[in-house]
View (cartoon, rainbow, N blue to C red):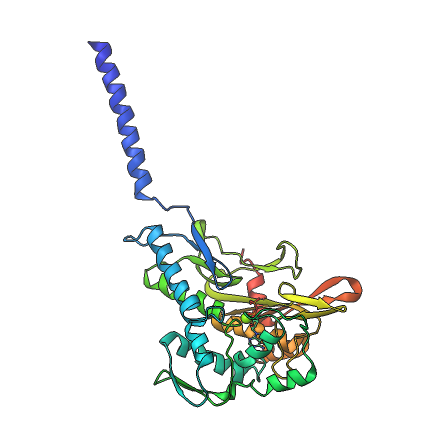
Length: 354
Ligand code: ADP
Ligand code: MG
């Protein structure tokens, strides 16, 4: 009898420990965990990392909402690769007609036009015909990938943000020339911002969102650790870390642009996918990569493209004048190395704060 009751006690204690363990585990299901999901979008990949899930949502539900949002921005709205997207319809619409826009397209075009003015024309979404002719767009690559000056001059007559008359209040656009808009220099950043808005609205306060290298970061990782974004080495091999920096709890957006992943070479000349809207030529200088930290990823994305067009000297002076946080990685061909230069505003993020 005694033996049985001792066995029963032992059994009860074991059950109690198991139940307690289960309760403890369930009370803090997310403690110390980073949830992660991702997928494909905008011809690249996205990743979302979260620290705490909102009480009423499962990870699958959050992941579903994010994928639906990105699908809408990419396939339905801003892709030039999808023939039925809002942007493709806008590009096909006749000159001089009022075109009704979605709220998102209105917002992104207003920002693109503001950044065109801010960067003295270095960022220009109407550079599309040249992006396509140089073989960096959705059109099939041509055998004669390098256009003649006559072709470039003809295409340049269709380039200029002043040909876009946007009425933000009425969500309406009128093209005053046969322009072709390419949002690839801003749409990824815009997508990241929209995902951040969605997570904010769900009450998620710590996250890391990335779409093809453009980021939005908020809060801390578990254990009060700073998210640590990296600057990539400007080489076209497997990604390597060139430099790291620290968000230190501040909500920030980061975007990078470079001439080392999307390019082609012909007769020893390096042709990159950033096009100078003034000359119609792919950029050709020693600036290999540039990283911008800003409040929104759309702005950082467009600014990074603009800095690639400006080059290090002009870009650096411009960034300091506007007090922007920018990191330039310049190629030193002679010594087969890279030279780094960053603005005073960027310096703050290189300090871990410890
Ligand atoms: P990534 O896509 O590698 O992040 P960017 O953000 O610099 O690079 O975007 C480059 C893309 O933007 C090009 O592939 C092209 O479609 C478009 N583009 C090229 N030159 C310009 C420019 N001067 N202004 C705006 N968009 C541009
Ligand atoms: Mg960009």
